[in-house]
Structures are given as structure tokens and as C-alpha cells.
Amino acid sequence: MTSSQYQDGCAAALDLVGALIGSASLEVIPLKGAESKVRSAPPGTTVTITCSPKFGLDRTLEHVATAIASGYRVVPHLAARMIEDEQALRRFVSRAVDLGVDDLYVIGGDADESLGRFGAAEQVLHALQDFDHGLRRIGVGCYPEGHPKISDSTLLEALLAKQVHADYMVSQLCFDSAALVRWLDEVRGRGVRLPLRIGLAAPIKTAKLVELSVKIGVGQSLRYLTKQHGMVGGLLLGRSYAPEKLLLDMGERLGSPDLAVEGLHVFTFNQVDVTVAWQRRVAETGV
Figure (tube, rainbow, N blue to C red):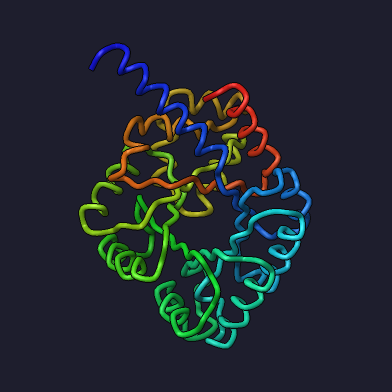
């Protein structure tokens, strides 16, 4: 490779990272005050609204309605374990589509016990095939660094089964670019074809990120992060995490067709203003 070719490749990689950051979807938790936080993002931004056993599906739909009315493209999360029965599933989807939703992110959910017969995302995907739901795209979750309660082989089997009815996958939060690429290479080799939206942490204070990461169960990746140069100093000095580093560390592989990365899913932890300021900085000054 000539020097000119190398420089062109580096420039293309930087452009790709900038484009991915600028078009990232922003995950928001439907807590009190989240509606005003969402308005930090420019209209047209894709916002994903989570669901949890604590707040219920109605809370998710309330925030979906508010965000759509404010000019955002919204992707609701739907947790299988929070659905009482097929009637409840149809009701949720129908209300969401009536609001203007055409993309749904289906997960198993964090609840220890299921409210009804749905215990996994795959079951919901099958049930969705039984009626004309009006959705254009359906996403599912994936775990590049495994799941604390589910074996890797079971996760792979489930992902292969889910892709029959899904259009893309979103990865759980990850800080280790090498681990992400290794996992993608492995599952692509095993037949997983779904395009990937990389789950990326927002550029929030490092200390807060460590606390939140432990809570959502990505300790293995967090241990990698804490070993990196400057992490301890970042904690002591109150610095913020730089999400773009994971993308830059992927190098040319980020844009390779075999990995099929289609976008980013940013876990904002409701720090939408901070996330949007980061996106604007990248757009104005580059990565």
C-alpha cells in the first residue's frame, strides 16, 4: 500500500466514524423529565424508548407519543416478559403504529418472571407473524461478550432463530473493540446475517459510566475498560468517556461488508444533551 492509499484509507475511516456518530439512534429511559431531555436532540433524530417492569408498557407508549409529536422518529422497546397475552401484544403494536411507529425493538426483558406466555423475544417475533402489524422493521438484541445467565451456544441458537423474522440486531454495551470484532467474525461464520447497530455508551463522566455499567451487567467489558491507559486518571480527574475510540480502534473493519455494521445505538442514560453536544462537536471539528 502506498502512502497516498494509506492516507485515503484513514480519511475514509474517519469520515465513516463521523457519519455513524451523526446518525446514531439515542436510547432514552422513560423516567420523569425524559420528555424535556429528548428535546435536546434535533427534530428527525431517531430516539428509542426503553421499557421496564417498574414503569410498564403504557409508560413507554406515553413517551413514544410525546417524542413523535415533538418531531422525532421513535423506536419503542418491547420486552417479551412484560406482555400478558397475544391481545396485549396486538394492542401495544396497534397503538404504536397508530402513533406513527414503523420500527420495533423486541427483547426478552429484565423481569425475573413473565406476565404471560411470552418469555423470550423469539416467541414475540413468531406471534407478530400472525397478524398484519404494519411495522416496516424489527430489531433484536445480541451479546458480543455473552450474557450472565445464558450460555453462548444458547445465545447463538436464539439469534439464528430470531433473524428469520428480524431485520437488524443491536449489541449490548461493549467497550472492547477487539472483542466486538471477534464476536462478529464468529457469528457471521455461523450464519448470522442481520446488520448490526453497535451499542455504544454515551460520552458521560467516567465514574458514572462505571457505576451504570456494573448495574446493567457488562462487567467483563468494564474490566477491559478500566485496564486501559488513562482510565484511572480519568476517574480521578472527572473526565468523560470518549465513545469514538471504540469505533476508531475497529479501523477499516468498521466499514467492511463482512461485518455489516449499519449504524450506532447510543445508550444515553438520559444524558441526551451531553450526547448531542458530542455529536455536534464531531460534526464541526471531526473525530
